[in-house]
Amino acid sequence: MEPLIIPESVKEISTDSAGNYGTQDITGTESKVVYCKKCVISNQRPRITFDDEGICSACRYAEKKENEIDWDDREKQLIDLLDHYRKNDGSYDCLVPVSGGKDSCFVAHQLKFKYNMNPLLVTFAPLRWSTIGWQNLQSLIDTGFDTEICVPNTYAYRLLSRLSTEYLGDPFQPFVYGVKAYPIRMALKHNISLIFYGENGEVEYGGDMKNADSFMHDVGEDLRNHYFKGMMPSDWEKYGVDKKLLHSFSLPNPDQVQDKQIKCSWFSFFKKWTPQWNFYYAREHTGFEPEADGRSEGTYSKYASIDDKLDGFHYYLGFIKFGIGRATSDAAHEIRDGHISREEGVALVKKYDGEFPKKNYDLFLQYMDMTDEQFQSIVDRFRPSPLWIKNNDEWQLKTQVSNL
Image (cartoon, rainbow, N blue to C red; front, top):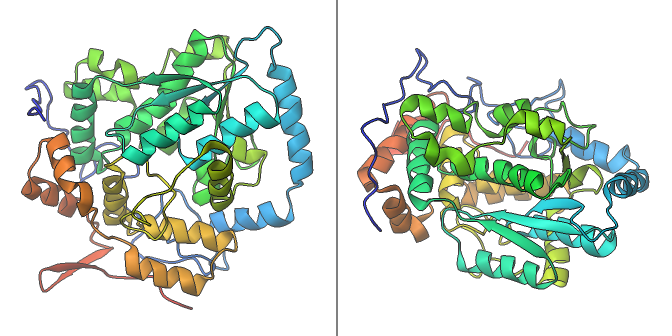
């Protein structure tokens, strides 16, 4: 892989007095670590809240899904919504961003084959496709979909990934930009007014509950605060990144979006969201295959976020910044879904959380054009002092999840 030339115009991003880079969601912010009494998530997850009984907002929402929401009524609402946007001239009547993962397979297949919609699928390429990720996307397309794929300028992708790793502690930030921006641009291009994403991660996994009772989110404010860590793609221009490199990652003019009345909706508002069930559905209907190694590094599951060879470093750095790794996220949701007990979840977290993703480490360093020493320095810079302590040259979490 060619060396990554970082232009001299790219200035070092200055920090504030707290060591933050003018962005949100950098590291855990609560000085005292508290774990949910029902699942294994902690209060370090950005925007999550805990009630007086020590239960997190995601667990409370899971209870609401189980006991309060009338899913038959939600399906009627879905049908009404689809009928409103349904077209009879053969053109696309909705758009579904897909990776080939279990969730996007579930959404796309349901919309076309259960609800008789004519969706256009759009894919923003990951940093480096995994073999199984590309295979699963092809299998989905082969079931009968039109699909447009954006593979952005590799140099721009690598540059933004490198900068995001250094200054945000997340190599996946440019991928998130593209996943949100590309579908909206394609919706404008094809005169499509309805975009369907999978789940509302803020309510499903713990976060801002403002949209818990809404089927759509705001394209501006919610993207900046919930997905972009307070750093919009255009903000990189201030640090010397050529705006021509940012086009594939940038949102369209908001006036155009408003004029076309484009709605970004979550399928999880209408369907009870259960990742394990989505996996079984995708395997049966679109030929989805799980991780060949039996599990992904950093967790015990084999079917979530397996499209990118480098996704392990997103989860690993999340573990560093928040003390919340891949196994914690998987176990917390499966506890809420009733698939495992909290005791089982605690054991899985202790066994797998924070496992270093060594399988593709050489590829990661080549892609970022950095040395092991440089990466480890970045990792240590993002360790919040309330979370970590060094004993005998080994970093340890000060507070770990445990059985009640």
